[in-house]
Length: 218
Image (cartoon, rainbow, N blue to C red; front, side, top):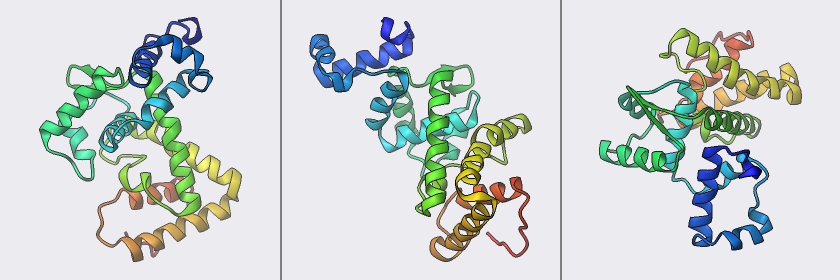
């Protein structure tokens, strides 16, 4: 308990890990130094790695939404939405694991989960822009045009802004522009009509940086 400062979510996640990996044997868990977690992020890393693709997508979208999200809106965010019963069962599983909270009007995350997922998503998108290998950029919009104004401002400040700051630090402003234009070209030639949020995110990034969008068609 002291190791996790009494945080109930961390304790629940550790208990689940002990049950799933060590069959409930706490002594064996404590004897395995590789699974003595230093902080809740490490605990969340362990749990996140065991989630299904759909479970991960739901969590990322709730982190992007940054407020209680109705079921219909959550389903509408998914590029390949599953049947309603599958989505509901997945949400129930996440709720049982203390990863998702039910509220009047929809679903949300605890602050600690939101912060963890935000940091993880920023890191993944940064890497994808640097390498040109896209996954999260296809599946998630860092700034949702349909969101309320204050939510869009929050998404820009907490998601898009940090990605661009890291890119400018490592690549310089000119280098970031080159990378974004290269991604635009790649999307136009390689992905065609494939459903993707990548184009919108890159356009938002270019607008945020004050870059010239003339001649760009996505």
